[in-house]
Length: 538
Image (cartoon, rainbow, N blue to C red; front, side, top):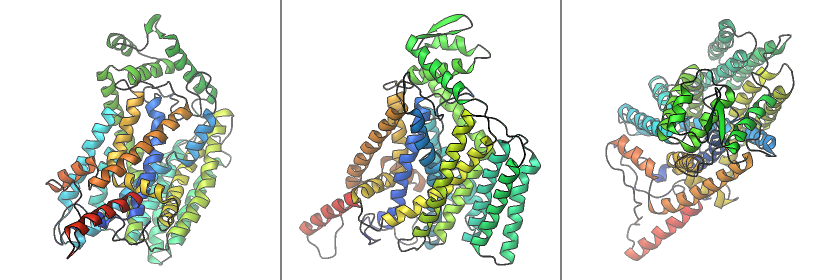
């Protein structure tokens, strides 16, 4: 990896001062592109669980549960434990931090050009929402782009002029509030007073700390003390709410679904319906009230695997709407918090190539976050297999660990980008990250082709490990395609559409040769080839 920031991300002509337009490639920070590429891989592995298994029609879904999904499957628990500990929530958290970082970069560049930015940013979020709707209906219903567009719009309106300290404190308080909300709502006696207590105390601490000029680490320690007290109150002599379904019950449901497809039919109200369901049979079944969990999961998997198209698209649209309701209650708040923390890091200058932030971020983030993630995995698995009082703790501990691990990954990759260690992998991640929007949707499209009715229709047919191996193959293929594409073009195809619609004019798609002053045509051609080779390595 080269250390020269001016060469790290390419050599497109810079945007002239005072003119708003797409960011020149030379202005990019390579380690941020590497982080985006790495985040895509973690998201791919977790999204696959919901693209191969049903997750929306029944409250007893098993997409993200530690159970096998095909007859005779082994190793499913280990697959779940690894993904749950190292990937689940961690990389979407990282992706959200990166959104906030990108927001701060855009604001900084707009202010440096002394040009209005509101209209451009609002168009940018509107186009992103359109991409998200398209993505959810066609490929993956649990889309994150609509969430980012909505939250990003609110974040711009409220927080674009906040100081780094304000961004960080609001982000931390809001994030820890979502953690305490998970803790209290999963417990036996949720109440409005309990929900409001922790954030109210943290706001008082923030105001007091600001007036008394406490260092930021002291304020953060006080915030964590409040959350620690909330955890202690939750487990101190109080009965815990048991999980809604046991592990054996979840496994029995998964077995029943796979057995029905192996048999080629299933029964509803005394009528045997052949699988996969045709449109007429689906209409009859959907008119039945009170389908049990197994029947609901069979219907959903049939729609995933064989359609009909109208039912598949309706499922995507319904799930997208449901996720927006969930967003209002929880997800939008969490995303806002992570945007604020990411923007604060960027405004503080902690993500510059020469920043000293990387090493402590890696040590503290991974050193604390990984043990917490292991603890959360043990809590959630043991609560499904035995009666205990820790069920309500697993999910909030898991959420807390996700932010710590994401910050640790930021530090790790920032340090990595300054070395030449595994430069081929660093370059591949960077290319993927430069085309993050294209690759986010492309990896969903590839998974959908493998799992859905308009492709191979293998939903419910692959083991957990086979699903993970498919993800590795898709990610590798996208890395190769991204590298080849960026040797010729300046942006990914969807990035080009996004930029063109945002700025109201066609962005330059094809890369332009770099012509040094006084150079001959032959030397210019040679320099262009050398730049292309560098990008393949960087």
